[in-house]
Length: 199
Image 1 (spheres, helix red, strand yellow):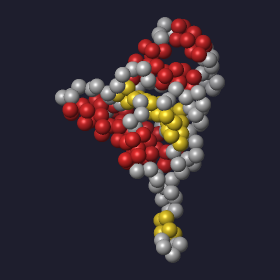
Image 2 (image 1 turned 90 degrees about the vertical axis):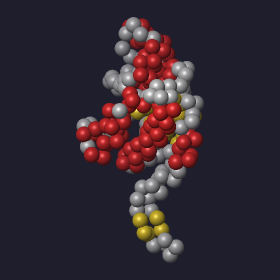
Image 3 (image 1 turned 30 degrees about the vertical axis):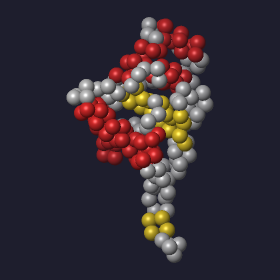
Image 4 (image 1 turned 60 degrees about the vertical axis):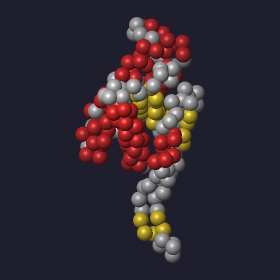
């Protein structure tokens, strides 16, 4: 069933005998995937889920978008365009001393951005999949650290949750990517997600 409009999304949910709000609640509790053919409303459905997630107390949403689909009609309260990394470092004589991809954003700014209830990280200007993975890994790590502190403070009780939405995840993750060594961070995040309120 094609779900390209709000009405079609509601129709899809009625067909499945679940409301968008119920789907959002389930998404906040367990990893969820929205799968389907091209142009059948996966992004539209995901946007409705994110909009419903913003109404659930103590749930934050992070959208990782390299397609620009979330830049328009985004349910997120804030959209942050991730700047291209510094790739060349020069010495005072103008000689190249290093060529590495390094983010120009420090952890202090990232922690401020992560205070938003819902935020879309726009990766459309980023050419390097490896940099995109490293940046996302850093965000997930910072969220996890904050959630671990809350769980300790609340004597093991999970009070806050973070939901990650990957738009066009095959571009970042690729097929069989969870088996690759460089993706161990994501495998670990998925494996222990329930312990800290990540999904």
